[in-house]
Image 1 (cartoon, one colour):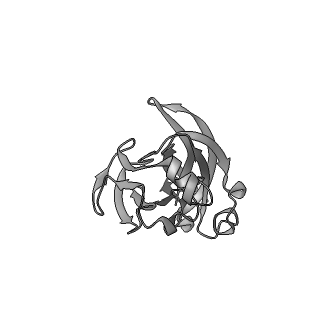
Image 2: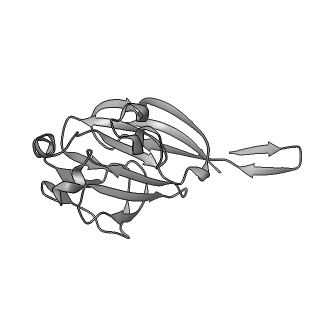
Image 3: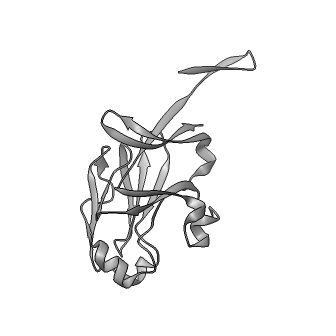
Amino acid sequence: MFKQMFGMRKVKIIEEIIYRPLSGTLLKLEEVPDPTFSKKMLGEGVAIEPSEGRVSSPVDGVIIHVFPTKHAIGIRSDSGLELLIHIGLETVNMKGEGFAVLVNEGERVQVGDPLIEFSLDLIKEKASSCITPIVITNTEKIDSIEHISGLKNGKERLFTVIVK
């Protein structure tokens, strides 16, 4: 897809669909009870209060960071967006207990590939919340973002991003 800019040259528009990485109740990022996320200090996104303990890849891309405490993972999509999936709040204090990472840094993933399994019951017991923010950390690459839901290719979309 191309867009004419000021009658001069054509600029390629890249549309990236971010799919739902886990099941549960969808929340606005502003509803997350942690100012780092609710004030969007780390970037733009959404959050999910999970109903089961499994995170799947929301994009096609590469794993760029697996936190040593296994509670968070970073993915760079094929369009260059960098996403952080942070399972629960204050889960860093669990030091990996109840988390099983299923991928390695540098590994290529596709939408729906399993990334992390976790004990939802243990997070509810030991952390302040199980709410899981999904954040685009390199917001300078976002031209526009549209929060949507609905199925595409059998997978539920969270939002569509136009990438610069």
